[in-house]
Length: 361
Image 1 (tube, rainbow, N blue to C red):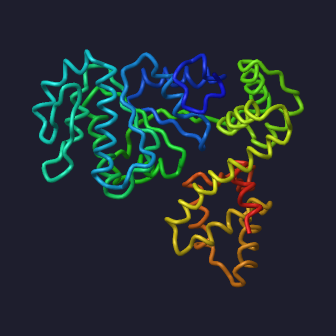
Image 2: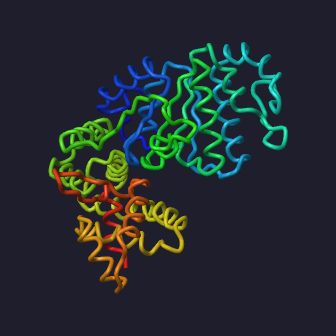
């Protein structure tokens, strides 16, 4: 079903991403590391799951992982145990070798990891899966930050260099993902490793309306084309929001007001995400928010944003200070930079976020 809000696992439920799936399949065969990028709610996890439908793979979802060694080890342990349950033949072949790894306790059908002084070595742990055609996925890997993020990057660099494991990394906060990869930092563990990047884009008008139309057909409904077009205009091809609209429309009935209800419901989720981001940028959170608001109300150039901020703060703002805020918002994918010849402007890629910020008091 196209309107299932959970990540898709089967091709028949994954609408019109054949081009990206072919790119993903080709990348897996030609590169040790594949990177999937795109803003939130475009279906990156679905692309990975569908693309690996018939491939043995370990998926570690880094969203919500506490920034502690215990948090990361618990998530790795749970993901590996799920993998072993689904791949009994691989489990039977590797469990003897797992017993020799310090900090790994082999149980009846899985493992338990120690994260203390005699903690499990993740390079040995994942390395035990080599020669089995396994793909290791770190979804939203940019959430691993600081010393723990560096240690994880060192582990991935070792696996890249010394095993036949294929690595897949994904991230919605694209700038932070590039920081994790060390694309511009020669001292970063993963610097210089070649990777294939696949970027997911939002649906255009034709694909958005086609997606909604077919999703409603699956539910036995015919919906007026004007409503489908209005939903696209309000939700701007963000697949996750289109799914939310489809489900809400089926639940509440054939009425145009559903679109505004979806916008309001989605706004609460987006506002929570934004507040979590701002919480990490104290005491400058007000400046971050006001820069977003400037863009939301149409101040899209550097000079327009700076003028707006100086009118709000009633003082001059150094270019370097404004630059730090813009870079922070770009790295977290709350803003996008649009280059048009010599002109540069900024936009908010998610229409729901733009709505939230523009109307906030």
